[in-house]
Length: 182
Image (cartoon, rainbow, N blue to C red; front, side, top):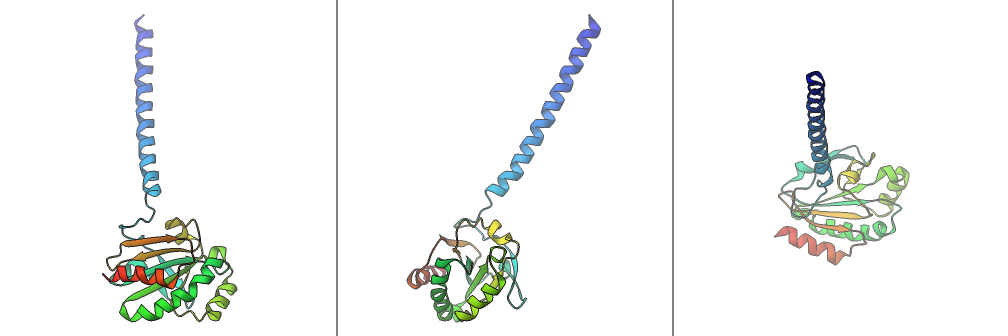
């Protein structure tokens, strides 16, 4: 009777050990996933950092721009609301660039046509940096669900406002800039 009891005990211990390993693995995996789930940009939190190149190949890293008021506008040339709000963004940029405003227009290049982007920038005389999100990294990192998506970032690097969709009016954009200046 003892050999059977020993086999059952050994089997039970092995089962408990394997169950414990599985539980620990599941907890660790879920913690990794929860970081990804909750890492979406949120008002009041530091804006996720990124590095992108502009149309001329100049590199921009968001975290290097701290100390400035920043607008990150995610857009595409085919997006009608994006097309309508670009002139307003250009006017605001011209008005506030000497007061520390940096406007980064992040083009969803992975969903756009590079030639169309160049034509759009030229036709609209856009003078702020047009950054190219070639692989969708920023759109994924910022969990962009609609275009345009605009993130207003204060001088400390925290997001002060997120506006999904558009087009934004000049008045709305300016009101958000005034909040950043405080």
